[in-house]
Each structure stands twice: as structure tokens, then as C-alpha cells.
Amino acid sequence: MGSRLPVHEFDLWDRKLKTPIRNPDYDGYTEVDDDFIQELMEACSIMRTYFQSYHRPELGLDYYGITIIPNESLSMFYEIVTQSRAFPRSEELSDLARLIIQAEREGKDLVHFGI
Image (cartoon, rainbow, N blue to C red; front, side, top):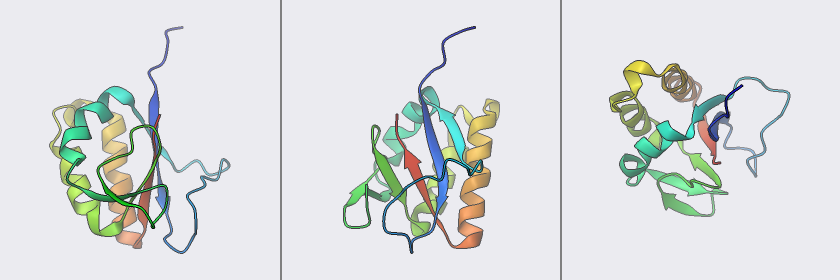
């Protein structure tokens, strides 16, 4: 059995909640291997986000922590994910793109749990 790369998790997030706490019983989250996220980091650096809570506006993804990607940034994030070189060969990035679309449709944000 080979060693597994670190993963980043993404999940839907309802803005009404106060802090990002993933429900361990909910299996709707998406895991993306670290190597794919590293490829997206530079492009994400201009995307408006929040680190840890809505009181900490930032840009990009918090690589080691929690990032809230607000609904208004989801179209940019979708473009970054689907335009990446790895997208055509990555089921994980395809799953992430579907999750982004679902969040947009439901008026929710995404939460990213770094490594």
C-alpha cells in the first residue's frame, strides 16, 4: 500500500453559521490531493476569501488552515479549477467543480480545510 499525499477538503458552507465546523457524518465533502491544490495556489491568490471566519477578509487559500470562499468568488474559483492543466485528468478537480456549481446554485459558500 503506497503512501497517500496530503489532501485538502472542500465542503458546502451556509453563511448563517458562525464558525466553519465540518460535520463528520456528512459525506458530501470533496477531497483534492495537495499536488493539484499547489498548482492552483498562484491563480487563487487574487480571489477574495476569508480566513477562519467572515471577520478576516483575505485573498487566496489558507494552505494550512480554513478558508471560506464566498458565493461571489465561486465563479472565479470555478474558472481557476476548470482551466488548470490537471483538470482534464483529475476526477478530484471534476468533483470540486461540481461542488462549486452546487454551492452557486444553492446560494452557499464553500469552505476549504487545508492540510
